[in-house]
Image 1 (tube, helix red, strand yellow):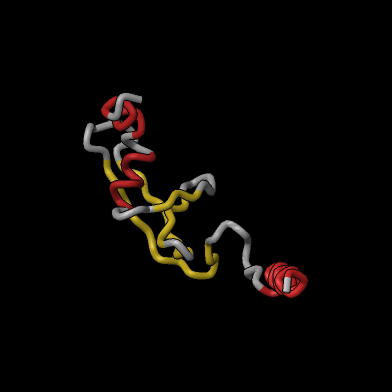
Image 2 (cartoon, helix red, strand yellow):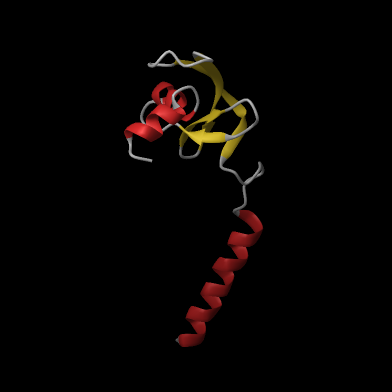
Length: 98
């Protein structure tokens, strides 16, 4: 019985290594699925006052693709996440005690 569990476990590990890997990059982003773009403007009048990023669909939801290729999970609100991650980054850090 113990040998059966080991055999099944080894089989599952082998299948996971061979067939379960996605055909795209391992970052969880489906690169061919553009979801448009989003623009966020500063609440504090910071310069630059607005920032536009592309959106991509992923297995876990939408991701923002910033200008230098950095990907950020949107969470519930892509526009607010973009604003906090770019134009209002330091103000957000200050408000959150960071």
